Structures are given as C-alpha cells and as structure tokens.
Length: 351
Image (tube, rainbow, N blue to C red; front, side, top):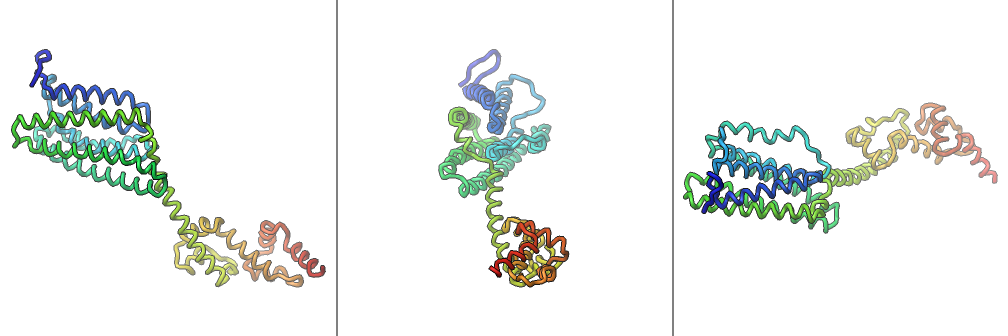
C-alpha cells in the first residue's frame, strides 16, 4: 500500500519512518539538557539519521552519490555501547577519542556498493559491542549488589529488559538485511514494516521512561565509584591482615631495635614487596613507617626503664641512634622529656 506525496511514492513504512524521525528528534530536544541522558540522545540521534536516509533512499527524495544506510550497521554497536557506558558512568564526559568508534563506519562509505559485505561487517560489529555492553552492565550489577540497596539493584532490571528487546530487534534485523538477496520482495517489505513499528514503540517507551520516570536512570550510581569503593574495602581488609602479620614479626624478633631499620629490611624479613609493607603499615596500622617503628622504640624504653637506668644507654638499646632524636620523639609521644619521665618514676617509687 502506498500514497502519493508530490511526485514521491509514499508507503506505509515511510509513514512509520517519519514518525520515528519526529519522535527521536523530539526526544533528543527534551533530554539533551540532562547530562546523564546524552548517551540516550546519541542512540535517538542515530535512529533519526538512519530513518532520514532510509526515507530518502526509498522515496528517491534526494540524489545520493553513495548508498548510506548500510553504513549505519557499523554505528549501531558503538552507539548502544556508549549509551550503556554513559549510564553506568554517571560523571562520564564525552571525549573526542570516542569518535574513533565510528571510523569503520566512515571508512565504509565508499564501499557501500558492496552493501552485503558492509552489512555483514556491521552484524559482527553489533555482536562485538553487544558483548562489551553486556559485560559492562554485568560488572556494574555485581558491584551494585554488594554496595547499594536491593531496591536499587532491582531497578537495573528495566535496563536489562531494554537490552534484551533491543538485542532481539537488532538480531532479527541482522537476519533480514543479510537474507535480502534470497527473500521475496513482499516478505522483506512486510518484515521491515513490522520491524520499524517495533522500533517506534520501543523508542517511544524509552523516551517516556526517561522523561516521566527519571528515578530509574538516577538510581544508577557511578560505576567507577562502586568498583573503587569495593576495591578500597577489599584492600583495607587485606592491609589490616598483613599489618597484623608484620607487627607480630617485628615485635617477636624485635626488629625495631635495629638502628637504621628500613622498609626494605621489613620486606626482606617478611617476603613481601616494599610497597605492600608500606601500604599495610599505612592502611592497616593507620600510621607511617617512621611513626610505627619509633613508637615501638619509645614503648620499649618505657617498659624497661627504672629510676637508676642509664637513659641514653637504654635509648640506644631500644634502637635510637642519637640523643637528640630520642629526646624529641619521646616528648612528642609521652609529653615529657625522658629525664622528667624517669624522675616521675623515682617519685612514685619513693611514695
């Protein structure tokens, strides 16, 4: 069935295409101000362009040097991947390097005379990007399950559902375009009509959700932060466990009494890397290496000092290598000089 618009034959499927063009452009206009919806706008913009070229090629509205529509099969995968990525990375900013995803599509324009080959390449591209999109969403979901409420995790279901619907539409369209040389013209046109009608409904629902149920989108917290938070939590627990082992070894062998003890010495004694030792002390012990060792030296002095003890001799025995550093550190930690502390012990013993 077809109508006439000027000298151009207009079929029912072309009416559907016009509706798709209008609804996707309108959706872009409404959603673009919201940073989170820029990825969705990219999907809608691609669909609008595809429908414009489809409409032009099917009605003969414009004379084109090249057949353009097959090239869009190389754009579908990257656009959908960027859409998913932009949702899961809440603070994600567009970068020029992302245009590299579309280089194959631009390169393919002069070769659209071999449309079936271009469509076949586009099909492989869609499958590859679908895998990356699914992996990204799965990893996000795994992180979310351990870090956010079950209610928010459940809200991710709508996006998975959309991915399934969108994936089915893409897969059946892959079959359609690759079977074009062998299928009856009427079958192809009917198939294409139902496909475009399904796409129109799908994008209409998606735009409706974005406008009227923004909480579905806003509940998707930043994937970067989720993963970083979980990694930090795991690292903190690991460092706490490592610190306990290091602390036990340092105390048991009294390594702190070595005057010029260094991280490399602890590393050699434990079999851990220097960075691991440093992280364990800083994260697990909540202090730096110097503070950790000097506090143990001061505590050793306090535990062994007596009113008649030679102060400097015991300080060197504890691991200090100079009188000035010992006096300064002791006063920092104990709020008294070593002499004052020893005198207080004498007073206590007399009392």
